[in-house]
Image (cartoon, rainbow, N blue to C red; front, side, top):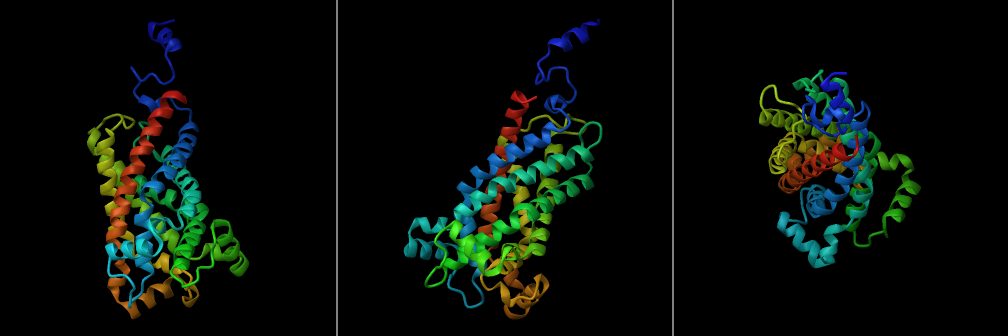
Length: 317
């Protein structure tokens, strides 16, 4: 038995000294996908509790049509607090908490699964692979979690705008939606959501993977940890890129999931009506509050996710 083989017998599974693959090399073939699901779920729950008020304001502004109630971000927040208190900015939070955990779990679990199958022998993704893995993660979360969650959330927020809100809570609201519209009522805007989430994650994961590769340098170990503050900065940049790239899809999705969605024949009719009646600028309603939320959201998400993945790689071989 050689010296190296004797040492290998006593090496802890998470010990990276002398291993080319670092933490990733210690993981069993399917372990990283499962770690991604668990780490993603925890990350989603923490992140949404921090950033929800900006999501609330963004949705309110997008639901505000041509003759609007709100003058801008600050006015929307001010009117909400004046009418319903600070708690008003958290209306619909329960819906996103219930949904954010599985959404983030599906997103990161799917990405890790696709990445494992598309990476080369060193664990490196090609530029096309980064886009495709992100796209696959976005489509997966759109179909399995995001569409029903976002539909209920938008209806909750939209319901608050009426003089006599009819939804008394999460379970009551979901029950009313299903009773009136069937399960189909929770899948309004599916096409727009797939387009939005697919492009969102394609952009974000592409930018993040590219920036991490740039930071590590050519030929570096792809599992080498990147400092968390750097990850946060990269995440904010990736979030900004995704906002600029797909806010029009986000506006269409929000309209398709609102209480007045029945006036649109389909996703493309919704886009046509917005263009005709409100003009092209309407496709970028809520861009600034969405930008503030998404940059913070993506920065926090990737920082938390990377931290949990590094922890799991140490204690979960």
